[in-house]
Image 1 (cartoon, rainbow, N blue to C red):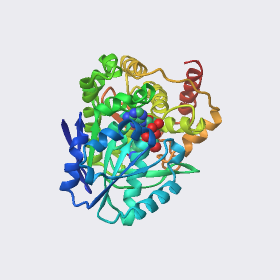
Image 2: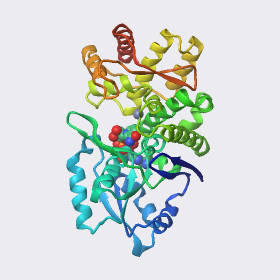
Image 3: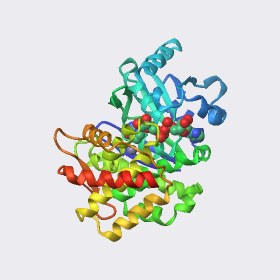
Image 4: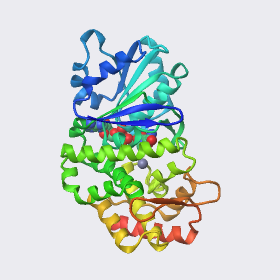
Length: 363
Ligand SMILES: NC(=O)c1ccc[n+]([C@@H]2O[C@H](COP(=O)([O-])OP(=O)(O)OC[C@H]3O[C@@H](n4cnc5c(N)ncnc54)[C@H](O)[C@@H]3O)[C@@H](O)[C@H]2O)c1
Ligand SMILES: [Zn+2]
């Protein structure tokens, strides 16, 4: 087992990465001040892993299980209210602990529920998708969607600990695995040249879920994110680089109604498009751009999509990461470094989006 500490101005907690981690959770709860524990999961994840999870607990001490249905459309306040009522009915109080056991959806909603239930209770994350392990379970961002946009209601609330168990990834659908790996490729591109090189040369082993290869990718991705969040917890500057591929990625998700692509796939398309801006601005050379592109594509296939230019442009302007009037892009600077630019012109954006749309239709 590997442990990476996350230290920010407001939190200090361990992220454990390894196999057979469920066995450690009861001990962790015992050591905490929690007097009762509740698990939030989905029926699908519970069917696959619930038995093994419960086997780690003494029968008399099994946590109460709450369910959230799978699907982004359930990441809503109504579910938070329902679950809070279920917590109350089951006797949860200020000293209770919530265990978010699932993908990013359960982590985000569970973290938010923990942030506001009785003005805040402790929670731990057991992320079960690669995306949740390498990205969403670390950093303390929690929240739910509104009809008007994703993640518009939320709060910063860090978990007490994260247990990223590589074994649970064995049941993850292939497409979900690949979608999460795009965020790890991103981690390499923006801040970790060694991770980039490893992913450049070991795609076959990683995609075959070789445990050692996966562990290496997960550890490096978490270390990258933990390092960035430690310096910039609230996204004032450095944390913005985590959004490489996200300005256009979010626009693609919105313009395709959040149905055609998984988040990581939209981000991969967004990274390819932003790479063209970087190439034109010479923040990457042609050889570097080629290596970045080939490495992103190695974790494909990228599903094709169609979207109207006007819709994409409008959505790119609405991205909440933009300050009024500026178009913010994260561009790779060489491999393993990135910069934030605020002056991307209308013409540059149009070229990037037109190139993207032509390619996305064909792919
Ligand atoms: N808080 C953050 O910093 C942050 C960062 C990135 C993304 N997010 C959020 O994360 C969410 C997406 O998370 P996600 O990609 O993990 O999707 P998800 O949680 O919706 O899970 C994807 C699918 O995989 C299934 N699944 C999960 N674990 C499984 C397993 N081990 N075996 C088999 N099936 C499994 C789920 O049932 C679901 O159908 C979005 O809501 C996004 O906004 C948050
Ligand atoms: Zn992302």
